[in-house]
Length: 139
Length: 139
DNA sequence: ATAATCCCGAGTAAAAGACTAGGGTATTCT
DNA sequence: AGAATACCCTAGTCTTTTACTCGGGATTAT
Image (cartoon, rainbow over all chains, first blue to last red; front, top):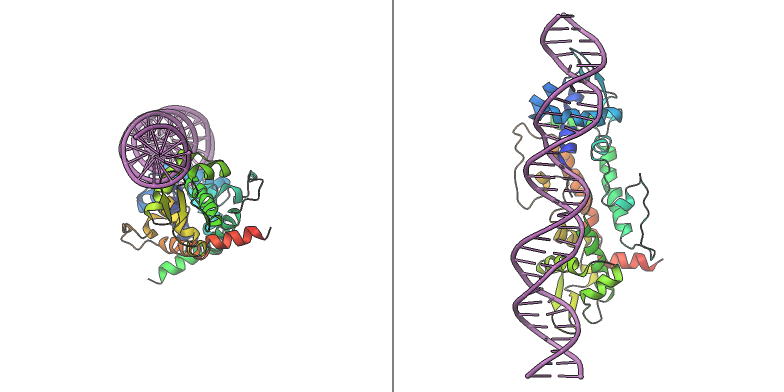
């Protein structure tokens, strides 16, 4: 019941890009060094971030990545969903691949998972990268 | 980022006991049959539920398990915490084994995990087994 | 041309998850 | 007393997921 390193590292990397939003693209090597992460591992994460159109890539020398949208328009949920796949506490409320609950007799626990997911979504969908930067700046 | 089968099965089993709170102890075999679960696997879960004092066991013929407290005094969080170990999205906010965040430069993502955990705890700590039964009865 | 980058498919080692096996112990019913 | 019922406990195993590494190819600035 934990966010994996994909989500953790990915969010940290996205915050670096958020800080550099008005500058040149940032190469992964630089992010890796700043955040003490494996460059090769980051590449995998960024492949997903790119296909989900959260970042734009620039190839070749002087290349790197930039956010596709301003930091205020990217939520934590966007990032985690792209990297973790799903953020629901239970498959039956994950949406996406709507695999029905196979308990005919009305799964009584489902409403708990729905409440839990709603509470999580509330935070994930309202917190943006800009919010995090603003919060960090105050300290 | 999912609740495991431990939490899922355990909660379902606890709901059976909640329904039978005023009756005789319920043997695991019966719960296993009703919920289509492995009896042996349930035994493992109930060991944890017992050490966390959520259920009381009665050995021998006519034995089984009963809730240690009324259904209105056992929350979903109690059950899941007993079975899943921790319910935080990130180790650094899990409490318990307080392993400090090793980012000296003030981990800016931490506040997200704290908000997320708070939102989850709100649901987990306020929803009781009695609430779930009441909800299920309405349908 | 060359160096700096992103791009991509495999492969792998470790950990976690989801159980099963098989014995022991306490209690009750007959 | 003895059989049956049930909890109790330690191991072990199989599968899936996680967290990476490896090695090469494509693209672009200088």
